[in-house]
Image 1 (cartoon, rainbow, N blue to C red):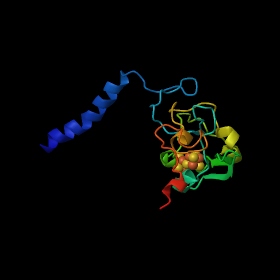
Image 2 (image 1 turned 135 degrees about the horizontal axis):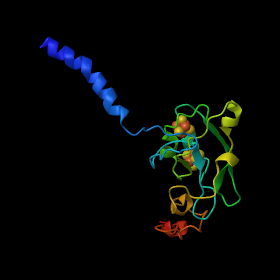
Image 3 (image 1 turned 135 degrees about the vertical axis):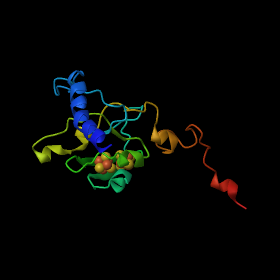
Length: 176
Ligand code: SF4
Ligand code: SF4
């Protein structure tokens, strides 16, 4: 029994080598050839816009709170119509581990992952991305969601005119 196992143990590696010698190589000649990545691959982060073209980010800080390596920072500010946005928004990609937790935490779908993994560089400061490097002019993977139309009442449209929203109560009607 030991002899048979020994013979099999000796010849099996040769058989594996022989079999793979005639297989088509799977090596991809990167960067000339690009690999087809899965749709949900997590790489470079972007800040998207809503269908009206406005910035989705409301500078709520939830993404930076959810980030396990603390690589997102921003400063919140407010427009005249009450719409919040980030005066500046920064992601330090030298620390990012591409876990996607920030995208899970984002209530407005502003921050999204893309499959663009070509971020490497020798100058670490160039991997600190500012808002102008992150903000894109499209909606990313959701073409319909507009946070302010769902919950930002009084900003995208007057109170009571957003879909599924009841008009505000007239407090004078509530008098006893
Ligand atoms: S992907 Fe993860 S590590 Fe990178 S910014 Fe988002 S939460 Fe932080
Ligand atoms: S990207 Fe999303 S979670 Fe982060 S501050 Fe903006 S709205 Fe909030």
